[in-house]
Amino acid sequence: MTLHLKTPVMDANATAGTGKFGALPEWDLSDLYPAPDSPEYAADMAKVEKDCASFAADYEGKLAALSGAEMAECIRRYEEIETTAGRIMSYVGLRYYQNTVDPDRAKMMSDAQDKITAYTTPLVFFSLEFNRIEDETYKAQFADAGAARYKPVFDRMRAMKPYQLSDELEKFLHDQSVVGSAAWNRLFDETTAALEFTVNGEALNLESTTTLLADHDRATREAAARELARVFGANIKLFARVHNTLAKEKEIEDRWRKMPSAQAARHLSNHVEPEVVEALRNAVVSAYPKLSHRYYALKAKWMGLDKLQVWDRNAPLPIEAPRDVQWSEARAIVDEAYGAFDPRMAELAKPFFERGWIDAGVKPGKAPGAFAHPTVTTVHPYVMLNYLGKPRDVMTLAHELGHGVHQCLAAGQGEMLASTPLTLAETASVFGEMLTFRKMLEKAKTPAERKVLLAGKVEDMINTVVRQIAFYDFECKLHAARREGEMTPDQINALWMSVQGESLGPAFEFMDGYETFWTYIPHFVHSPFYVYAYAFGDGLVNALYATYEGGLDGFQEKYFDMLKAGGSKHHKELLAPFGLDASDPAFWDKGLSMIAGFIDELEAMEEA
Image (cartoon, rainbow, N blue to C red):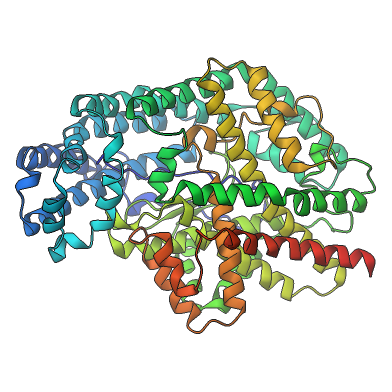
């Protein structure tokens, strides 16, 4: 088992920006360490080095001979190392994301990564040797109660057994990662954070510029889109190099491991069957005409346009009055929605607002997007936003707090079992969004207000389902093409446009330059094939919410139990109490039908 360090993953649907929206909270990272030069930080770094060395000395070459009780102790020690190393990397990583252009923060993170990688290299033997344990021995060892609770982790690890390399090669890959994918990830982050745009004479960062694509003024939206295209075009060779290198690196490792596909490693880590993902993908693609194509035809009509341009995709409706949402109001909306579902949800969200667990404002050098980072189970999560005060930012807050609540509840599983597979990681976040949307819809005072809310939710769901599956198809095409040779920027652009036209539909015209908009999507760089998790989560939550609305007895308790389970159960086990099964193709149609139902209501409003 390679030491698992949880890295913040930017949410693809986050919207953000800057402005004066009340007292925006900032992180207080002292719950991790008092300061970068604190003795506690130095002591933990030394502890990782010492504990890794002693663990290897005590257990290397001996795993198969351990009794059940000895195996439980071995796992406890491994988990302790993972917790300490995770605390260190969470601290330096979060400080870096606060200001990615600060050379001191960048150096501290890089130095910490180098040290942790070096210190944990002796642990590489663990998964390799563990996977060589005979099945009967494995079964006997995990009959022990102390070891048994960790069995789901090791069952997933043994699923990687057919793709395991030699001990020497695994150690090489572990050591080499700091100058391989990690270095290219950092180059991408620093490049995107440093990009400068000028719109209407104002100098802006990436986050603020993409936010203008939802501005009420169409000329401003167009200016932002064209400026994004100009800057992306000017940097496209660098972005193409990053993607070519990472895709080739992945192809080489997959080939050596004899992975059956570029996506296989992601499916294995998600503990989800390829056919389930394929059923999801096919269901969404088949639904493009009744979802995105139909909705955007409606939107073109509302806007009085024959064709939508790319800068109209997230535009407010003409009847939507511009307004900024103060931070205090955003908090109150989410708090009420969470509390109405179950008071425990609101209580779990409370410390995020009051104890420095959220960093909301936009600052120079701050990473774009939004995330909830679980840190380690002995501390607490931290949420990052770039708050612009738009109604969609309220949904982003609800989304990230959902992650945070999920992470808090799952922490009781301990470091090795708390992490939820990506396919289920979006469950609480999307459910939190749905609760917030339903509460806002309930409070709508006029048909126009209801229409605006419904349209906004449909757009968010299209962005979560249709757009992310289009992203997934783009990645599949990109990695397949890279196996045939180096990709030019024009070739990557063409792949991007092939999925955009199909997913968005005939209502759109695409400006020159839109073909470069793949360049800034962080998931393609940080977490290949992550994006289908959003569609998985949305479909799952739609089915869950329908069950909740149907009045299933004990729904809240079942829901909390599901979140508390973390990564300790397979999706079949987690969904069974709700009478749901993601391996049933009809499951996905049920989720997509909720989106279609909202569009039905919008169409009915036109006819009324």
